[in-house]
Image (spheres, rainbow, N blue to C red):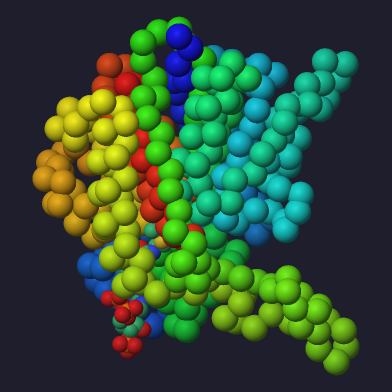
Length: 343
Ligand code: ACO
């Protein structure tokens, strides 16, 4: 039977580090390192320079993952790009990444299809679930799954926006999902959604039901009010639902994989907030050593947190073949997902 496994991982973060103190000193945000650290665990994040967008960050991570898998871009059958900060409203960042991989050049151009996934913090697990289905069905042999975000361009980096802007950072992670006849790989991939909370965490920018969809000023220039331009979040509501849904999704993914929480060697949690993850770990009685984290260095990179965390664990030798791992994420939508993998 054909299984789907992760045959390569990669990641990239832009070089500029922005500490909590930098948010205060360089952007004039009324906050303290202690406030941010205590409530979120975040110490620093990376911000891309102007001119760099999500497709470019994703391309760096994708090339890293292709090299790790030992395949060429032309071996890919599908690209899935998960992001909430796409380069443009359309086309999606998937085609921009495809072009950056040089797939359309020369006589042997391979016009690999590119799909964008818009599921925010759960985007990587929605994309992975899709890749798993495509590989197991025989439709694809190698699928590139990328999560990439350029949050820094769209954060309200002022005291007004501090609750949201202190949480997010830029970065990209990528995996190659490949067919294998070996008895290993993705054992379960569970995803869910509850659209009754669509407005609890959202960044609207426009309202397509309005004519025109962005209000115009007297000169006919579109004007976006701050509450539409920047993400709005009921943080406490997100926190409460995240803890409940992440623990339930993890249990469900283990059930579907025919395994138990105790049998999992390593838990990869979406890096939204260290406190959320500590609550979930406590609830499920997980030893801290089984739950790696890097939010202190990168903040919340949304669709990129899980592939970055995986790639770092591979690089530092924590994640090696034979380990049984579980991943889980929760975020805007609300949407969530969890997966169990025999690595
Ligand atoms: N520095 C200093 N003060 C701040 C900051 C900041 N960065 N941000 C907010 N405050 C202030 C608020 O203005 C408010 O002040 P006020 O009482 O004078 O009005 C006070 O702190 C309390 O604000 P709350 O929003 O009630 O703070 P809370 O204790 O809920 O913490 C937080 C906010 C950290 C966002 C918390 O709600 C949380 O972690 N929620 C989870 C949300 C999350 O992780 N989202 C990530 C995206 S979704 C996902 O990936 C799952």
